[in-house]
Image 1 (cartoon, rainbow, N blue to C red):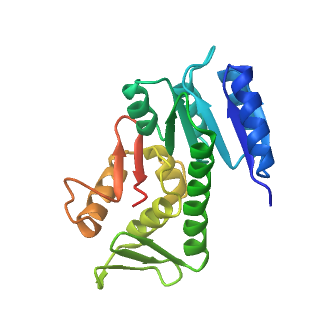
Image 2 (cartoon, helix red, strand yellow):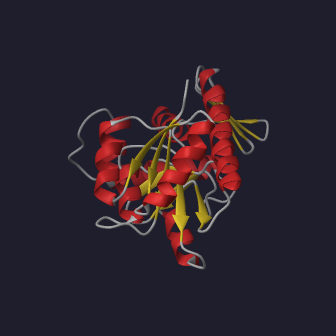
Length: 229
């Protein structure tokens, strides 16, 4: 099945060039020229990858990325201005999968797109056969077991539910409210610290160093996510 890509840039010449080159490789390309148009198109259609410029009229690239991450883990490649290292750092902090500095070589962009899709396919294959591997950890979805460095890890039902949710959606940030609604299966009106307690206990069981977690990571002020090792 052909992959659908959303290319977002306010420079028509760049979009025209990318569209021409990527379509020759069999991708279906949709374009957007400002931040709001990008958000509207993303919400209206399904895309397999987004190429997103930082500097956009209206909503900038970071704001667009945040809105995408509120509902999707679709891969995003950010395009940053030359020498703007902070843009690269912020893009990765907000959940970008990769970045390229303008001007860039189209062959490098194509290589990075293919690499992202290869990683996604590997994750999908692992999750389909009921096994998820991350570093030294092996999660068996079917029998609800976890093995780290060859040793069984004893998790409670809720701890495993949390780990399974994170591991099958790497990079997706879940707020405490999201986790309560998804894992506890109802709108929780009590203390949100319930999530923090379970996360802390889960980290103590699966992390080599719980104070510096490698798997269950925190996005400060937002929530938790799974590091795709």
